[in-house]
Length: 80
Image: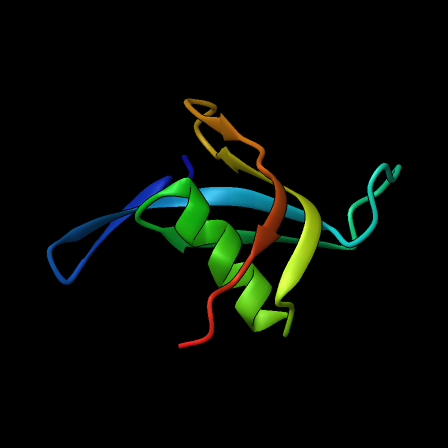
């Protein structure tokens, strides 16, 4: 059985399958990874930051347990 969530520092972290497209429409995503995050957009943002991206044409985050599919178009990261 796969672990689909993690309790880290009092925050419930879900596992998401995240895909990023630098060009849209595109047949295959440019980056794909499993990411632990508190919500879907945070998972997308974490993968974007780890890949050094500030903007993507399309992103998708699917909860590993199948409970959520999230796909915003034209995502950007705010400089911290």
